[in-house]
Image 1 (cartoon, one colour):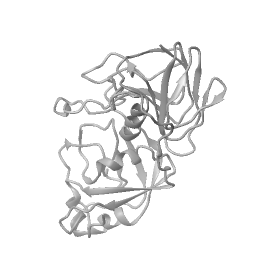
Image 2: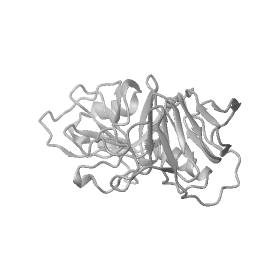
Image 3: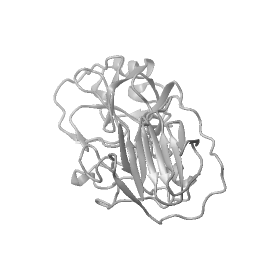
Image 4: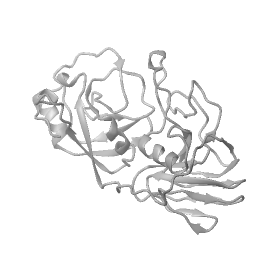
Length: 297
């Protein structure tokens, strides 16, 4: 068992989510930064999809009732284990009674704590993930909660610390044309890839609200609700885009000008308020991108 001592701003249980249920009105959810969650699991010998803890902006602490192996990946945080320095991106052995604490990250937002064997909470619709928008899965952690540890683990990897690139000051995200890029003026499409956007404080697991160049529409009529995906850049009437993350709604009624490429969603999930994002068109092999803008690999 793991006893939660401090839960921080928001700590939830996450795995790979619930793919394939959008037609039932259920989003995928799952870890916002899937790459970091997968790495944390590999470092303790778990399956990549084993349930982990997603810690938002640090401030988390837990006590272990038995010996185990844990690993942290994602936003780099100061780590302490019963008064001794720990580390990121490598396996840490804990003894019965040890207390592990995770401080606030200097960069990034989300840190993933994997425990060898996985977090064992009852699955809902095939996943142990907490969906903050739909209210599915286990409740966010709070002090005093106890979590069971499963036994779904293979061999421990022969690794001390995995090399991980630092989170940059300015994050560049590759995009592909959205299903409604033709609803925007050519100037808006140019502005999306030419200027920088700032992450606002009105951001969470559902999406990131951005502040920057206004994206003006050439088509102003109402758009019937249509399906959305993680990484969609939806533009409400104020012209300031919203970048959908893991807990996004499955439908939306605002036009989507572009979609962030799936490998870059992990980087978007680590963007914190005040940080700047830039978008660039990913090469499609057709010689043109958004409304004829030249592709840039």
